[in-house]
Amino acid sequence: MDAQFYKSFKVPRGYTYGYYHRSPAPDKNLPTIVFSHGYPSTSQDWAAQAVYFANKGYGVVAPDLLGYSRTDKPDDVAAYKTTEISKDVASILDKEGVEKVLLVGHDWGAWVVSRFINEFPDRVLGAAYLSLGYMPPPAQPFDLEQVLAFCKQTFGSDRLGYWTLFAAEDGAEIMDKNIDSLYDLMFPADPEIWKEHMAPKDAARKWVSEGRRTNALPKFWDEKRRREHQDAIQLNGGFSTPNKWYLALIAGHNDDPSFDASKKLTLPVFLGLGLRDYVSLAEPEKQMQKNFVVEDNLTTYDFDTGHWVMMEAPDEVNVQLDKFFAGL
Image (cartoon, rainbow, N blue to C red; front, side, top):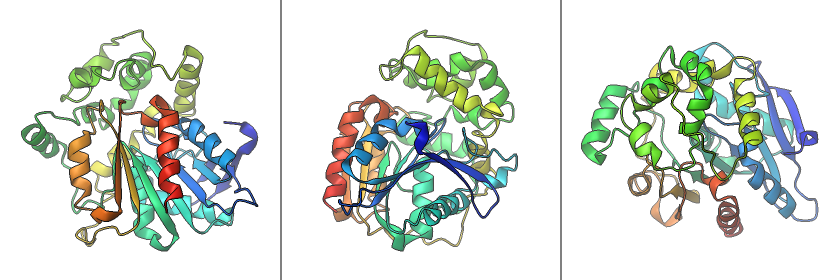
C-alpha cells in the first residue's frame, strides 16, 4: 500500500500506532471500513482490499495493531488485552473524525472487531469476519490442555496444537531463529500441510525447532514480498511482541466473567471461511456463530482457500465484502 497514506498517532494509553488511512470520496456518501489484521500480520495483508474499497469511494483505516510493524511494541503482556486494543482503534477513528464504521477482521483481528462491537455498538454498521468469527470475552482463563483435549474429542483434531510454540515463553526465540522454516509452515504453498504440522499438539514446535523447510512459496507471494513481510514482523523485537497476544489470553487479561454471552448480536455479520483451513474449521465455525449472532443477520460464504483468505482469493473476497456492504 502506498506509503504516502500512512500516518501515526499516539492513543490515550500512550502507545503510538501506525495506520493506513484513506478518506471517503466526498461525492459517494460511503462509510469508512476498518481492517484489523491477525497473526503474524500487518496492515499490508489488506492491500488488495484497501485499494479496492478506496477506489470504490469508501474510507479505509487499516492499523498495524499493537506489537506489529510501525506500531509500538510494549513488553507488558497486559497491554495486549483486546478490549483495550479496540479502544485504541476507536481513538484513531476519533482522531480522523470517523463515527460510524464497517469492521473487517481476520484471525486475531476478529477479537479486536468483537471487542469493538461490545464497547462501541452504536458505531458499528456491520461486521465481516474472515477465518474466525465473533466470540464473546472468555469467562475464565484459557486452559490450553483442556482446549486441546476438547478439540480432539469433538473434532478429531487438536486444531490449536501450534499454541505450544506461539504461546511458549521460548517461542519467540525459536521462531526468530528459524523464521524461514516458520514462514514455510505458516504461509504454505499447500494448505494441506497444516493437517500434519500445524494442528496437532507440538507439531509446529517440532517443525520450526528443527528448521524444516518446504522451500515453496504460496501463490500470493514472491520471494521479495515474503522477505518484506518477515522484515516488517521482525522490526524492533521480532516475535516477542506478536506472541504476547497469545500470552495475554492465557494470562486471563481478556477474561470478563460478568459479560452476558447469551445475548446475540443483532447487527449484520458476514463470515467468510477457508474450506482448506485446518485450524479454523469451516463447518464448526459456522455452527458456533449461530450461538452468537441472530441467524437472519448472519451471512456465510465458503472460499476454496486455506487460512489466508484475503491474500489467497483477494478478488473473490473483495466481491463478497462489496456485496455484503452494499446490502446494508
